[in-house]
Image (cartoon, rainbow, N blue to C red):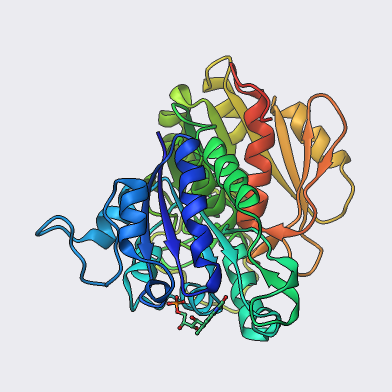
Length: 401
Ligand SMILES: Cc1cc2nc3c(=O)[nH]c(=O)nc-3n(C[C@H](O)[C@H](O)[C@H](O)COP(=O)(O)O)c2cc1C
């Protein structure tokens, strides 16, 4: 049974959250409601406590169980956080991390999937700040059930009406179904660049930031998987939750990932492992001279191919190819050569996607069928898109309805 925290904020549409709570309960969810103090002007705690049979929180210091911090307990225990209706105020607050009441504090402490259903006056929705907050939330993987067009409570016409209860409930139930998709599966993600030392202070590396690996680890966690991340020195930290093994070099990456690979059901080899390392590591710091310096490099082992050899026969192995052109031939050749089930290619020559950026655009090539294109999405959006597709290849997996 999924635990849903339903946040209700200060909109006239707050009364419709009562039907939404019932709809989610009919879907088999345990629903606990958190009202903002403004929502309490429209609806009452008693209404939701009677409907759900659960305590309802309002104030930042509400503590239904003495001595327990409810905001942390509720954030930890929730499988899904739904905010419906979501005011402009709460969207702007959670987008920028303000935590000045119980709901925004739970939202800040919560690391799982979230759904928001905005409801407000059309000018408040169109406001640049509200739009920027919505974009920010989407880039973190928050699902938005868009408000409908029509006459809003203030008498104006435009977009801003809360979506229908059935639309919000189905989006929530779909998200809950999705969060079960990798339950019981072990997922291994290799992430970030590697560093190949030249001397005690210098190294060879590449521009991988680790953002795509972190996004995949987060999405896999949201889907219920038991996740291990083996990461090189990435610019962004891995999400909270998975087992994290930190490595520096390709050889360390190979050793650490090899220990995890034999028990993994899904291997996502996102790390940009250096193809070469210095043949000799200079002891101490090399001194500058006026002479040319020739570095001899030797090839590193092929980490992905090695993981493929160690993996269970029915494990699914996904590689990544950062290709400077939109020519998929190189990616396809890599798929064959390394015995991958899928390869996700992205064109790193395009501005604004790929290395270091927050967005990506993937082309997923499988052993069969035509390549699929994700279109330009946030990295977490790409991660969700990719996992939905590769999960279909796992043994015993049914296609999502
Ligand atoms: C009658 C009335 C209706 C309101 N409806 C909305 C609404 O639908 N959407 C919205 O964003 N704000 C609405 N507001 C303004 C919010 O209640 C106000 O910004 C409040 O601070 C929101 O607090 P909260 O986000 O903590 O619930 C309304 C205010 C009043 C007085």
